[in-house]
Amino acid sequence: METSKRNHLEVRDNNGEYRPATEQEILAAAEKVINSKYRRGARISGPKDSKTLFQQKLVFRDNEVFAVLFLDGRHRVMEYKEMFHGTINSASVHPRIILQRALQLNAAAVIVAHNHPSGDPEPSHQDIDITKRLKEVLKLVDVNLLDHLIIGSVDIVSLAERGHL
Image (cartoon, rainbow, N blue to C red):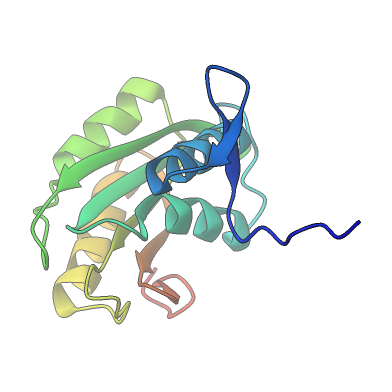
């Protein structure tokens, strides 16, 4: 007996029958997996972990989203928060708001990231400037800015790896 190849994911409907999953259902399932993997208390053990998290969260966004991962002293996740939403090519970022949330959570470190809907992760001068401002502001209260990631459609640029931190 020959089995047919399936080129799609399936979900079970309310009657127990399997049917092809919609794009929305696939993305919702992926979101559940991401959220469980990076739940509160999960350890970020290196740059690969944070790159994976932010890429999965931000890569398909049509507008710029600036997100922050707040970490405790052992680099465990306290909170992932999308803090600023913008247009297709910019988002206004307010370091004061990030600082306030870091203090509320008693965070020891943060990793920030934003997407470039154009797909090109090359940092702009504004990206580098906000990174420097954030580092200075957070440093005043002993919160360490570990990285600023820029998420493109395929690649990710780490400003820490480029020497901007």
